[in-house]
Image (cartoon, rainbow, N blue to C red):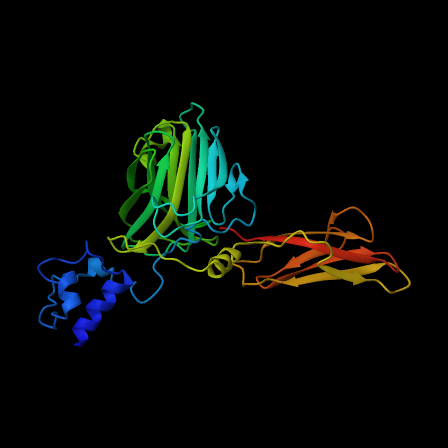
Length: 363
């Protein structure tokens, strides 16, 4: 078989080109199967950069972390803030309830047998500046600046409702003013799962200034938006309801490719760059004071991954048989991107236990 045939077969079998992507006049399933394609049969119009999403074939495509909603270190329900890892729910006056939802085994509405999807129940409160949204911030405003990107996702609602998808660029503290309302797209949800795509031309950052704080490329899903937010939400308006989202992917180019799966271990490690919460086990670590007087003992730990920045820390444990307390309050706490130390004053002959720790370095 020729090199051209090998390439065509590989692209077809890997899913990079499916039967809908293959032009009937150039590359067909029957031609691939019969080996009838040679180098002359693959023309410039047969396999295009748009179809292959050039630049992403050989590497990771999806910039979204936890786009399959597999990782929920903080728990499986909450209101605002981070619940599913890397996904932040924001609301002003309107209220939100976030929960992890499970797909039925063997369902075929959303492909590839995902385990979970993300649910936000919105209770809208009237007000021009009121809103409810779901956001992910991607490190560095340089990310794909001046280029075309495509987001794809599956979604449904409890009734026919619209949501709006917005991109924005944040230049960090002391940097240029944030750029909002980039190519906002309105998506019409129904009570059944549908796949949606939205393409945006991200502005160039030429002439801009990046501040001292962390810059980012942000993607926002607007569920409820008062009139003050019309320019950012395509005049979405205010609404209550239940909104479900699954398999979110953001990639370079103007074409959505099949959802990229990463193992749970890979996804967890990516999430832990921003947040780590260890299990609440009893006495993960114990230090004894075998001296004759009280002294400071150091409970320390190494993070499983290098974190984005030195995190804020909460270390829980106890001194001797006391009730659980926050350690590091007596003599201090120190953290780096690699690990932490919590110092606690312990009486002579006593001990200090660490039960669990939380390290947060979100954008």
